[in-house]
Length: 500
Image (tube, rainbow, N blue to C red; front, side, top):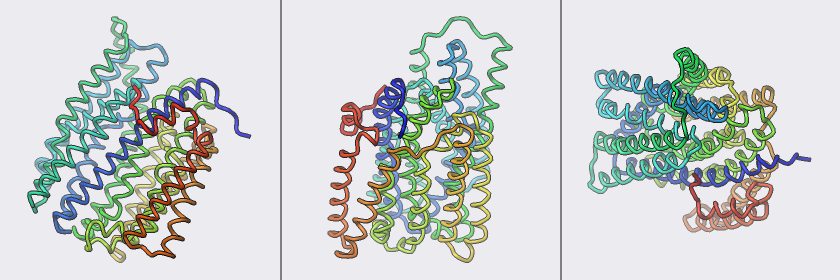
């Protein structure tokens, strides 16, 4: 029999439900906007030119992960910890310790890229400091328990602006990758300015003693901050490299056209990753607070509830693209249909990964950043080795196998570690219910319908309507088990309120 969460945890889960549903909604919009950008670029440019765009943006995102220095986790962890331990007089020092190195590193790397990178990436480099500081500032607001800025800026405003600017170029029939890259990166400017404003408001919202910390106290905090954040910095780069380096390797070993096919075929993966990030960002502050005081029962309930929601949101997508792979790829044009095996391999791996939940976040919030670093480094090394061996003979399918193997390693190993070190796991009743419901409605039902009615547009639409209707009924019936039993949690599914 599953133990009931303590009252404080139930309140935390209700609050997390509001934030989590808002996070999933915002992540869903960001993912849809990303797919829209991919569709516009794939349609407007040939596979060669589209491959150049995808390679440049992948390089920019990877450089951004390098210069963030792990602060997207470190600031959340330390700001939440200092607030819980009544050390508010150190909050300003913590922000300076985290933000100043990010600013310096981003300027240095941007200068290096400006003088050494190829043309599309060189133009993006000017915006690297803005992107890095924007992400770090939003992490700071999450450390104060305020998630609205992340939802509004990172998940809604910036993706919407990117979609609009790139859409304008597509309508104007622009056919070179440079303008598309510029249109994609310019929205980082207003996002960075607003993120800085949001962080200032969050800082001023917490009463801070006027006394300044002593020099020794400041140095001790800096050492502790970077001892925790340093390994996470390397891990975050390796984690993002798992998502981006394969595109660069395919471009190098297989050509830009192959890179475009691979990027388009794997674009659906980003939707699931964004959902994971949305839920993780909602849970991080509460999880850090629970683990900082040794409340593993609350941490376990938070982890299991969040994993159930992640499965509930992502498994329908992965199961549907497996069933209707030709339909999905056909949306981007006939030149991308050869990516079918890539879709099946990656979707299968992501089913396992999302079933493990936000396991790397749990490991980091539990203070095991060095373990996390070892895991993600091993996964990256495995992916690169497999890609180098498999891309030349097998092309994009070889790259998909390399990424799938790395994803499995990077989720199963930390899952074992979390269970051993923290005594928690993601397989609660909500996770099991969500998985069974998704498999029934989006795995079995569409397969049966496809066997009877084919995979034409009308058949796909009918199958989707039936699947979602059955899914909605199942979610309602299992709402208590899924952690959606309160009227407030259910209203959040409809209103998608942004909480704090």
